[in-house]
Image 1: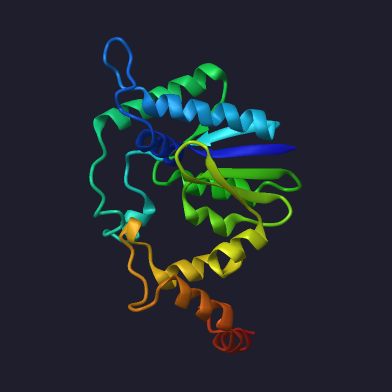
Image 2: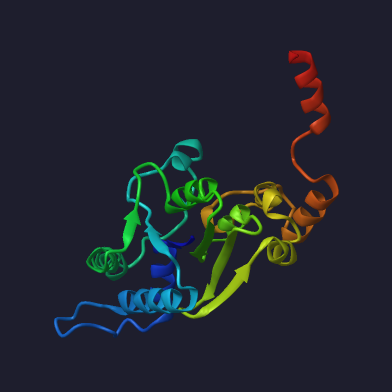
Length: 223
């Protein structure tokens, strides 16, 4: 069984900023994001021919990340109201088409996709998103990422070797790599002076941020 999991917020945002905002109904309602997202979904269904599809969305409430790090995404400017209104229209469109949508208070859509990936079993999962955090979920041969690089039609398909080639680290190392380099888009600082290349070099050399010697010592002490 092949399942498509789409990051609804990410793809709708990409469509909104890729297409002109003068696309509108006779009443003046802007529809560029709805049109772009629908085009994406239609093309994906045609090209991938999945057995099932789910679209996940963020909610307006703060998440556990904001509680852990109040500065999380604090720098982001409010997006245009015409974008937020189209997110609601996208959800209505998906409901009318019989496509399953999921969202959960206190969590992001990314968390839902990660939960799906963890329970995918022997099935195939293709994650469609413009968020690099999904790289850590890739696991051969069943879980891959179709990364939206820009616009509504420019994608890159990544398996484990593709993630290693793109970032310099494996998917299982990506969380440590991201912690070292930080993430300006989410307002999360990394280690001062450590960028992507240095982070990849350090992770390649030491494999993990965890002190495995200390871990073994602590484990033997507990035993």
